[in-house]
Image (cartoon, rainbow over all chains, first blue to last red; front, side, top):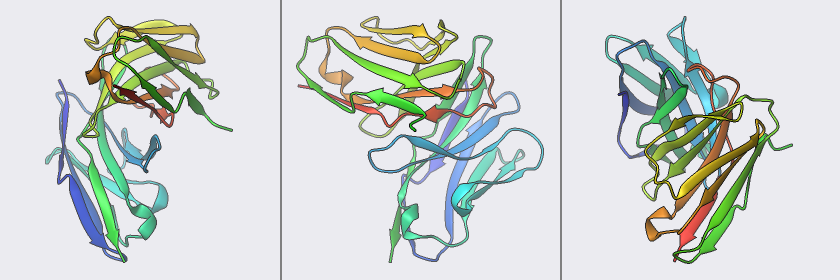
Length: 115
Length: 114
């Protein structure tokens, strides 16, 4: 079974500082990887995804992530944090069974942005 | 125009009751899901349907019964509610059942069992 580990359940950054959220996964096959963001009392929204091809993927709101196969990592970064980035972030890996797609999530990282 | 909509947004009920949550998507997707998010924000898949056919059932108690009348709707009925059922339930859809297709989530239904 696949699994996802997000290092740090809480991250605090100053406005304008780098945001770095760490994600490591385990998978016996080439993975499909995703980052989702959840704002309070809302559903999850796709930030970006890696399927194949270029290992550095860009997403919405200035976020990007790099797939590193050798490190089994898919860390999320944003060069300059904005107050609106305060939210919960989830890394996920797709496990494709014969029956269908099952998305396995990490435990989430809550980002707090200080003015 | 909401892509994946769930009703109700909040549901407060007593132990032993039966309740339903409805979900509709207008994205034309073939695959729909129910996920459960517990109090620690951990998300876990419960069910997945593809074109009205159940394709994933993740060891969920049989008190939970999904129903898909058509591929745009996936409802969740819960019998004999227990305290441990309190959580946020998310409906989602994806264009295909393959792994690269991202999920589109509804805004969730917060179920509180007292």
